[in-house]
Image 1 (cartoon, rainbow, N blue to C red):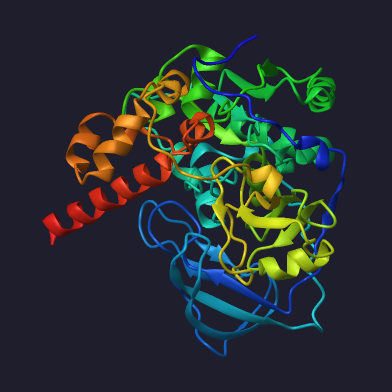
Image 2: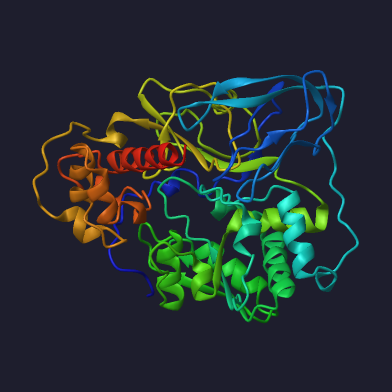
Length: 440
């Protein structure tokens, strides 16, 4: 079965929520929309305190090439624009909207258009204007992925349906519950760009999704499912490209350099919503799991909903809850404030017990080489961490620091619990700060 070199197979914990249908989380009375919800530049507000907005209205525009607009998920009144805590651990300018409880949620009617009516330029403009970004966690503005330079051509589109992070099932549930729109989105991409083949890469621990999608695709030409070996981080773009078409994305490059574009499952659904229903990203499908929460759920939650309200809807935390993590356990971020809101890239909320988090005591590096053997990028993580720890970011950069995808494989397999990824993140931050100082 196809896969990539390296990687690990952590305990999955998928069984906690994989059979639970997606529920709608109650609408929040107040939503908090951070202007930082994607890779790249922050969005720029186009509203002010006191303005009245309707669900779906633009409230912040893209402020640069790598940026994305934000739309209000509820109708109501702009209370203020102020700095609030963000998932990333910083304070960010945030649009605060008080929901008008007298206004019913909007119904999004399908437009009378066909696949053939949407050109490549139409497609790019729509997904750009509707704020579509990668919903698997990266948040890269999706329209940029489809912009080709002279001489470039998109031969294939790879659909990332691996969802290799433990606990998380939001893509899996969407494939089962929103299959038609998922396929509609893939067909749209294929038509708009005249693409030869769309390949859906699914880990083989999702047999129900594989079976259902293959049945629905029985009469569709040019779109197929490719089961992949269940292994982390199979869902990384470069890993997926290698596994599915046996090509390597060049160092510092993008999948487009080898003629492919990689798109996440829920991003495909969002593309279909944007084109056929004129709907921007207003909510997220996320998994609430871990043995520290009283009721695990898969939820559809409005953007800007505080995590505290999600926790309450799931019956609250139990006495064994040790740590809250946003995202998956490998690449997620520990939640420091329960009132932080969800954003476009939120895929999960995990309430983990001490047994689930395991031993976290940091010991000296044993030079065992496990992190080197398992690194899917072929790096030497222990050396990168050592350089950064001793202030030699320059040496870390020379030995591949910027190629690190921060998947956490090295930390998972380290017997000394070394904070390797955290150190690499610090190194990248110091590199960015140094670059800014040079320009200034």
